[in-house]
Length: 623
Image 1 (cartoon, one colour):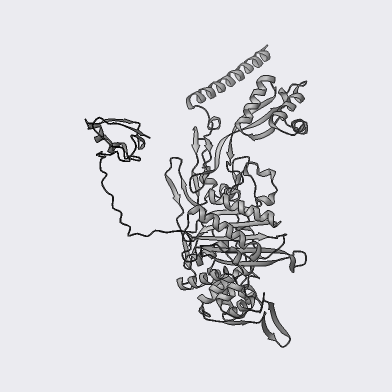
Image 2 (spheres, one colour; image 1 turned 180 degrees about the vertical axis):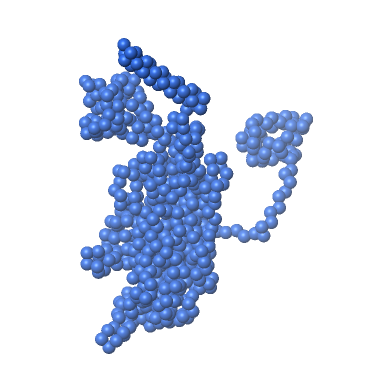
């Protein structure tokens, strides 16, 4: 009996202790409130990405997932339900069934990130059929209303709403601020990022570049437009492109941000910078001349002679003719006037061999090798645009230095970041990097480039009536990765354009990669594209043409004081007269005046010139 009593009281004691622990824990929870883990964290609404004029390129919106909870699926009807869901959502027949049968988990998704309109159709289907086990889940999603427009700049986000490319990735912390998951709250809004891009300019240049891509059967096309004085990028085109609303439907090659990542040999366009650099070093000036006999030759030893073929036999050439005719021989001879290290240093001043600082992930620095590794043919070859790698972003920025009087500007894609209330969080002002050329040398190079757009120049197909355009074309052979030698079929046709040449405002750079059309020469297929792009921007921004009538005046405008209307012996023409000047007529006792409407006179009775006598009825209609 004593042992039974011992076991009994032991059990009672243990139960009492357990109850005390539970009671104490309950009391603690009641006093302290819910644990941090049970507090719902704030909801983060990602900030928008806008163009320079406030047009939204990326916004947060409500999207919906269609989820499936397997334990609740109707065993007899779920396959039929899945078919109806596929029909409503426009999915491939049998796709939802395959997802269910292939998954080993009880919770899975039939489709993700559908818009509200489609989700409402699913809700209506649930009301009609029940759709047991099919759930509509509301989530925050990213919407790109302009679809493919500027897709490489804007970028995209992943399933976790985290930026994976473009500005979405680079400005992740600004667009989607970090919050303490243990801190209670409702909604936290991210900042807005304002781009320098002009959606209208982007649209026009994308259309032009897309046509060039198709007409030439090219692998890709890059086209950039930049303001010379500020470094603001107005348009940034990389084709092929993609729709960030459904980026997984595109091959990864379409995601590639070519203007910032793709490094290539620039070809003869580079002569602009090599000649400008040699002039800045003081080795040559606009009066210096060289004799082109069809090829650059340099005797290294009795057994070896370096020989680089020219496009023609140009005779005596200056810097102007070197750029006008794209003379290899003249460019090579000009490079012989400077030391390798000095030549390297001045090209570095233009930004070659280093990143431009674009706010995009993974920008390439290109490649400009140390002079210690150069061969005896490297200097003339680099002067012609080979033996170095550049990006389209570098070429545009460097051309901007020539257009901007010799000052290299940092390229800008983002102008400012705004808080949800519209206040400024940060700004990206115009940022001069360094002076590369004297204003005088920059002007001389522009004049030489303008000659290239003349009748005898390689860039004549870029010429625009009434607009002074400075251009330089290029055709670069590409390396065959299989043989390590230059390919006889793969080329990059390119062209740079600066306009107006006398007061530069816009810089354009175009590269057509691996054209497969009738021609591969930059002068034939790239120059016309630059002309079309320039004409589009001239129209968009209202830039003056030489044939456009202009009016000059002192700037002093004299405004006369409006005089109230008076009616004498005949009826005047009151069309366009504002109502306030008609009010004195209502005080006339000798006339019957009625005024209908507001604004300005659009009709009158009697008509102008009618004799007026006492008692005349006058009716005026205003809009």
